[in-house]
Every structure is written in structure tokens, then in C-alpha cells.
Image 1 (cartoon, rainbow, N blue to C red):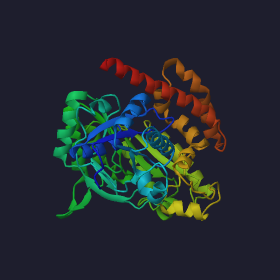
Image 2: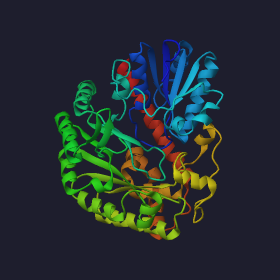
Image 3: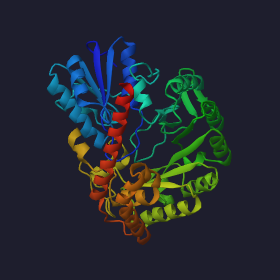
Image 4: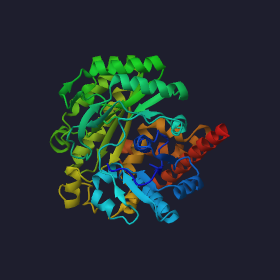
Length: 451
């Protein structure tokens, strides 16, 4: 990547979602910031979830460059607003856009009148340690997030983010986490790896292969030393009894596995997941009673999926929650992400029908931000039925009475397989209000603590 012109950079983290109670560390601005600080530049870090817009304006006026990062969807619209704000406040500033959306649609991003530079690299600054006096408060006020590896090489046809897998050396991981923990004292951490346990990678010295169970034991040793529990993402075939034992002993309390479908043909031949339904069922059996809660993630209404195959997904979800008492389930409506084979099918109208319509791609970032990707009746019905952790995190105490009627409605609709209609907008307004209120409380408490 070319060095930025000038010496002062403002990095802004756009609001990632309307409705999630999760407040993860904004690594997408912290790692690039570490890179620019290593080049001798002064970097300001601003987070839309918590920070004062007036502070952003002050920094924009003092900066030669403004950079932000966005994931395709809602965050694109928020990033567009911030980039426009920077250009309006300081017309001479050079604006930069990075993140997954810039990687997936670089030419479209370059056409935006408020974007000067587009970063298409897979990663930037992730070999550095992004923790210092300027970034400490971004770790201390958020739900701790870090990574132990990068990339996922599997060719799932709904995903555009296939990339080589690369682990962070255990020694580096231990040193960095213990340094942060000594200051911040976090009790939980989310590892943001797309695939924490793959185990094969290449570098200049050749191809390397590690024992994934031993890798989890090494990570678990660090977590036990810190007295911290952790969650992450893993593939269902990896959850052997030996792996589950290593994870449980290593303070893992939660995992997400991408199940996608409950139909064997659709998993193997259309999505090309690399395994079938039996692997999902066996994972549920193996993890039952371990103390680890699995979030089983599914999608529906994708190209080539029939109504019967979708019903198989619903039936598998019922089997999972009956088998694994600690199971949580998410069910997303198919989101057509550029660069994936199923996106190309959706745009061309191939395999549509059975509830999946031909997709008309947005023309710019603001239009991507207005899309209701993944959000639909099945999203809310399944979420309210099988994600009580999120619901309780948003609606504390007496506030739960606000959402309780919708939870009961969702349960009735799921039991009846009446999944085509739901008062989504009403629920979204309730949840969004709770999230904004919680974020404001975090911001206020941090300001008081720093006063």
C-alpha cells in the first residue's frame, strides 16, 4: 500500500448494525492505525457507537487524510455518511475506504465522488500490535475482540471471502493478550477468526500443518492463565470428542458453526460446504453436556433451494434444540454478496423461485446501506425463538416486557411454520432504541471515568 500524503490521519469506525447488543473492539480501524503510526504519522481514532460527532469534526479539520472501513450492507451507508462529512468539513482532505466492501466492489467504490483512495488488500497492519495509549480506551470500553488466525480457504458458494489461512504465532498471541489484559482486565474475549481451527498454511518456507486440537490446547492454556473465557468460529467436523474436551478445558464457553442448510444435497452440491448434515448432528451430540454453547447459523431463500429443502432446515433446527440444551440458532435470509457464485446466480436470475427473487445490485454505497440484507420474518422469528441471549442483552429487567409479546408470537409462528409474515419493523424499532440507549450509557460512563 502506498503511504498516505501528510502526517495526520483520522480513522473512523462506522456503526456496524442497527440491532446488535454486541460492542466488539473496532479492529478494522486499529490495525491500519498501527500501520500508519509505524510510519510516523499521528492517528486519531473515532468510533460512531460511542464518540462525540463534534470531536470527529475537530479531528477532520486537523487531518490531511480520513479513512474508514465497511462491511457490505448497513455499515456501507454509515461509512458513506462519514466520508461525505469529511469532504464537507475539509474539502482538501484525502479520503480512503477499506474493508470487505472495498475488496468486493473496488471499481464501484472508486466511482463514489467522496472516495479518493480504495484499499483492496486482504489485510493491512494485522502483523502489528494495535494497542497503545491512543487505542487503550477502544479496548477498555468494548467487548474484547482479537484474532488467533486469519482467512478461510473453503469454497462455500454463498461466501465471497475465501482466502488462505494463516495462524498468529502462539508466542505473539500470548504476549499481546497478556499486555492488554494487564491494563484492561477483560474477562471474556471473542476471537474474530473466520475459521479458528483449520491448521494448514503456506509461507516462504513451504507448507505447514499443525494439530488443530493441540492448537486449541495452546490457546486454552493462555486463557486459563488469564482466567478469561472465550468464543470463536469453527467448522462442525472439527468438533470431535477430543476437540470438545480441549475447548472446554481451555475456557471456551461459546462457538459459532456455519450450518447453512439442513438438506444434505443442498449442503454438498449447491453450497459446497465440504460436509453434510451428519457432521452437524454429530457436532451437536459431541458438544452436549460440555458446557459450551453453540450458535448454529443457517440461511434460507437462496438460489436453487426448494421449499422441501428449506423445510429440512427448519426440521434440523428443531432437532438441534431438542438435542443440545445450550443451543442457540440464527436463521438469515440469503444475502447476495458480490464475488460469490450464488451472488452471480441471483443477479442472473439462475435458480430463483421458491421464495428467492432475482437480485438487482445496488449502484453505490448508500444503496447498499439501505438494503435489508438478511433481515426478514425468518430472521426475527428464529432469533426471538432461539437467541434468548441477545434478547436478554437488549432488554434488561422490566424492559423485557416490551419485547415479550413478540417473543411469544415468534414461538407460535415457528411451531406452525408460519414464517412469511412478522411485524419486523416494530421489533427493529424496539431493539434499535435499546441498542442506542445502551451505547449512550457506555459512552457516558467512559466520559465520567475519564473526567
